[in-house]
Structures are given as structure tokens and as C-alpha cells.
Amino acid sequence: MTPVAAIQMASGTQPQANLADARRRMAEAAEQGARVLVLPENFAFMGMQETDVLDIAEAPDGQGPLQRFLAEQSRALGVWIVGGTLPLRAPDGRRVRSACLVCDDRGEVVARYDKIHLFDVHLPDNNEAYTESRVYQPGDEVVTVDTPAGRLGLAICYDLRFPELFRALLDQGAEWVALPSAFTAQTGQAHWEVLLRARAVENQMYVVAAAQGGFHVNGRETWGHSAVIDPWGRVLGELGRNPGVLLGEIDGREVERMRTVFPTVSHRRLGCAIPE
Image 1 (cartoon, rainbow, N blue to C red):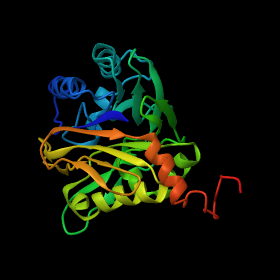
Image 2 (tube, rainbow, N blue to C red):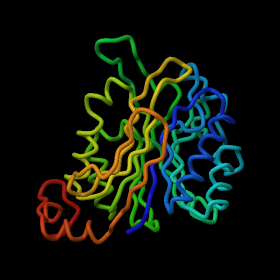
Image 3 (cartoon, rainbow, N blue to C red):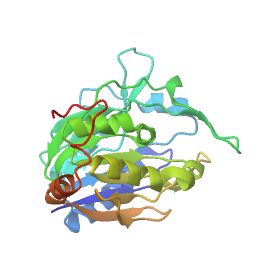
């Protein structure tokens, strides 16, 4: 069993303050024995408006301050870090990618996932509207990577609503998924836990969801409730609305056992990449 941690934050408009908060919470998680730490979506910056993210976007060369922060912290703490999301300049030169970098305990970037599903939504019953495609270019690659906690699949926030992505991660051997998120309070209250548990149950994998939680300077309210879910859909741990650190454990033997004694994965017939 491998200890992991979900870091919950309420990030604001000042990157240095956000990084200091992330540094403190990651140190706390590492001191408690976590070997893989998961940061939330937009951990370093949540601007007053969507286009503000363009001002802090970095070239995807590992040299920007946000990328260096992740590398330095993983080395200093001796842990793996799933780096939430940070804005890396997109190939089209106009927008950015919402990128999740995975750093090993030597500070090397071993994987990068760019958010595929963009949140272009006008929420019912209030005036909240989001159009991520104005500033973000969607990714197009499914990403898994071997970690101390087993084969990890990467997804980000709105991706949670698209089960076909999680099936693709399963077909690449994922035993657990890290889900950096910033769910709105309205959608989180309605759908967060049921979707997390569904993705865990139908793919018989662990889900470690690290969320933004609370009120933000820009007026946004996020749901929080970072959680660790096991392959049977049990909530092993969950935070409330405030920032904090959630510890959990990934047990690869439990994944194997569940897929053997209750073999829904091997019973698949439609769109199945697993041979008979």
C-alpha cells in the first residue's frame, strides 16, 4: 500500500501567495508519509477573469517559475507530485493548454497531460458562465504513467463527466486516477461525489481527487470535498469546503483482487480493447 495525498486549496490572484500555501501543505503531506501528492486545478493562479491566465502562461520548456516550483518541491520533499494544472503556451500561439505535469522524486517531469474536455457552460439557476475555449486549447492525448502507487491515469475536472476517457485510461493499464479539479459549488453539490464513485466503480480503480474549495477573490465559489475513492466505490476519506490535506492509500493488490473476484473489466463487450 502506497500513501498518497490530495491537497485542497482556495487559490487567488497572487501566484507567490498560492505557491507558498501549496509548499506548506505539500510539506505537511510529505511529513505524514505521502509518497505521491496531488495538487488541485489552477493551484498557482485563479484570475479575476478567464483571460488573466494568459499573463502568467509559460513556454513548455521547464524553465518557467511554476514549472521550476514543481521540480524543486518534488526534489526537496523527495516525493512525486501531480502538479494540478498550470498554463503552458499552446501551439497555436494564441491560447494556452491546461497542463498537468507529473514530477518524480528527482524533480524530473515524467508525464504531461493537457485537459481534453473544456468547460464551456452556462450554469442553470444563476449567472455563472464559463468559456474555457476562449483561452484554452484542448489536449488530444490520453496519458498514463508508472508511479510508486501503481499505474496512474490523468484527468482534470470537467473530464470527470466523460466516462470514455476513463475507459481509455483503463485500457492503458491505469490502476488509479488523479483528478485535479475546481468544481463549482453548484455542480459539485449535485454531481461531484456520484461521478467520482461512478468512475471508480465502473473501472475498478482508485480515484484521488484534489479540489479547489471555498470562496475566491474573483467571486467564484468552489465545492472542495477532495476525496479518495476505492475500486468498490467506497469513500475512504473526504475533506469539507476548507483548504487542507487528505491522506489515503493506494493498494494495487486490491485493484487486482477486485478485477478478479468481480470481473466486470474482463466482461466488457462494446468498445473493448481487452482480448477475449
